[in-house]
Length: 125
Ligand SMILES: [Cu+2]
Image 1 (cartoon, helix red, strand yellow):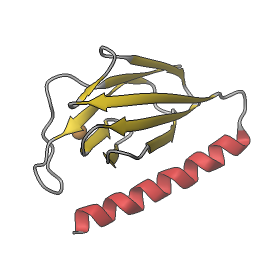
Image 2: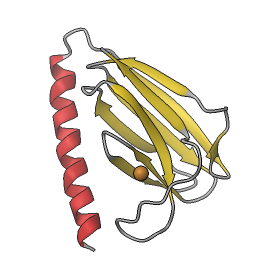
Image 3: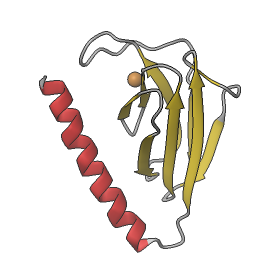
Image 4: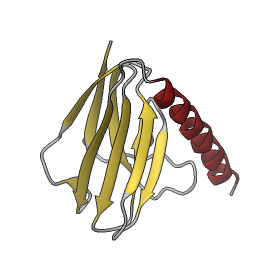
């Protein structure tokens, strides 16, 4: 499955880069947010995560059923399984508003989305 292999390589690169940024840590905060997904929705209504550019952001996901979530812009995808916590970690170097969406099971590389994003990440300069 070439697409999956590409994903794995890409995520490995990003994580190594985040670790480097965190060790420099010039005033950047490290922020962790926990989200619980039930029936494909976040249990709170459309949360917005607001961070500053350069912050190291960790999103921790749990779910009541298998689901794939995708952080647009930063292009981080995670498959989340019930009974585990999946981590998305990134340095918020790009400013703007980035939706996290649920991916449909349209096969590798498929890109179908639900109606509204689960969460919006807002990165301010
Ligand atoms: Cu997507």
